[in-house]
Amino acid sequence: MKKILVVAIALIAFSNSFSQTKTSVPQPKNFKLLYEKDNMTDEEYLSVNWNLIAAKTPKTGFLVKPTFSKSDSIWKYNGLSVLAAGIGGCHEDDYLIIMFEDGSKIRTDMWNKFNCTGDVYLDWDKEMEKDLRTKPIKIVRLTNGRSFDSHEVTYTKAEDKNYFITYFKKLDEFNLKSKSIVKK
Image (cartoon, rainbow, N blue to C red):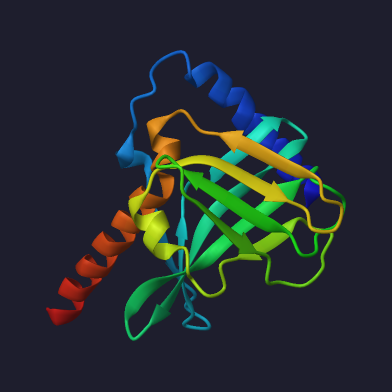
């Protein structure tokens, strides 16, 4: 799993280094929510097509994305999912700090159990939703609570700064669209 993550981060970092020479204008049309229904179990899934990348080298970094769950026919924010590589060995008591453009900061702690796969789940209480919905991000830092290694990235591109804002808008649009389909 770590090798796949390292290769994915390397490929994305490599491709981003060439794409930055063209333009830094955000491309909101690339942001999509992906809906899937398992016909065998009738379970439904909603995921994002693009992760927020926090990588400076091909071997060190992490990917962040919001997760969603369905309740009473409405999809809701369920927390954050992080896949980390090269930030300490195993993960336990990790925490994520996000600094916003306005200088405010929020911290959320890992709620899942010890693991060596790089899986870190955060914001169990969904306390960050209001800030993530409304404030552009500036800096994101993940700290391994076991080894205290950390990795931090400062964002300069508008689509990265507005990553969460964009996905929350997409979530609201998706729910409105779903409501209109159900009413028909």
